[in-house]
Image (cartoon, rainbow, N blue to C red; front, side, top):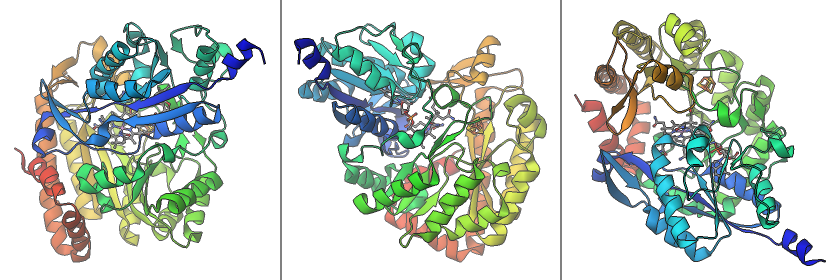
Length: 496
Ligand code: B12
Ligand code: SF4
């Protein structure tokens, strides 16, 4: 083998890093516990990088669960950028890949990259993820950052590593793979190896989730994992930012792959709960049916939920019935607004509210818990529209038990709402983040509406608890196993 061939075949040492999370300042007092779940993107990339013959490690900065003040109404969850950089430098990697999915974490990712650069001047530093993809142009202006990989990383990072080990500069600092014949979206998801769970301390995630850091509180501190079994969404809701990474075309792992994956997690990590975080778990009806059939056939099937929401018009009554039998703890549907005009003309969700009502009735009939997402503060909405959504949501809650899960529209980079609001000068800085202000409402108005409805939900919840003693017992079990939940939700519910 020639010297050049030896270099070309030598494995690179790769360190994949999940940054500390920027969270609200009140998290410091313990009133609002920051959340943690498996860094699925990095686990999946790590598995692909390993198959490509490189040495790979993962460092999740949140695992220390340390809290520190950042100022400006924010705090940091996990090790500080300097501490993370120390850990990374000790491993002397050739390439450092930092994940940046959330817009709030951007400043921290930039300072983390700078801290790594100071300690490892020769390392190649690359960022990727949802936020990184949306602001790739801004990132490559950072002196510490060599490359931004846009979109999914499983094929593009090994491609970049290949250039690096051959001593070649990538054709561009923004890597989308297409110039090299690498399709932007991965066509056959089943060709991907299972995420490299063995590279992280799974017990530490279970422990932190048990200690109140779980993003999904209804799992009772079980051995719960998040699973992402499909990518892409053909719809185009104006507030949603998934398309730049996941695309419009739906791509799913086969049911057989999903069931094997769950089997692997049960056997290797004794998991007993799955959060299907897909954007469209039910879009391919045959696939979803086959997953349900497979779960039904399992001897020790895990409980599961769909906390990221599914579309009400992509469910049949038979599926809802089967889902309950197959271990579904609760379903979540994305409704967003109770006003058809806002849904159709502003948000662009293309959802018939009759489909929502149907699913509410089905779930109530068969005793399957249901939650519904609503967002408030979309440009074009009036306070009267928000009131109408509040009435719609509370009516479905009171009559059909569809628990409303309400939030404020975040103008995320790369979304239609961000673009339109910024063109109209409607973006304002608010509480350390960016919010929307229109002629119809201010950020404070929207907050008032949302706090009002949260209080109404809480009161209704307490009343309903009296009528459903069994379910109340269920909630009591959650609280007993994790009393911090009260500190998290009570102040929020009671806040004026
Ligand atoms: C599960 C999930 C959560 C979970 C867990 C998140 C976590 N910490 O891991 C919870 C519930 C905690 C959550 C919370 C929030 N979320 Co969220 N979440 C998701 C969801 C549904 C799936 C993420 C996932 O696991 N995907 C599966 C893996 C395989 O994909 P991936 O992570 O994107 O990774 C791929 C690429 O991004 C890329 N990549 C990622 N990292 C890296 C690194 C390198 C080096 C490279 C090369 C490539 C690369 O390659 C990976 C493999 O292909 C996504 C939507 C989506 N479709 O992805 C939203 C999403 C990421 N969330 C979003 C938002 C806004 C939030 C919240 C701010 C919501 C809120 N109002 O509170 C909070 C922030 C919490 C926080 N600071 O941690 C937005 C982010 C947009 C943005 N630019 O900020 C998304 C895109 C949803 C949306 N509709 O727009 N979320
Ligand atoms: S919110 Fe859901 S339905 Fe709408 S575009 Fe995003 S993933 Fe698709």
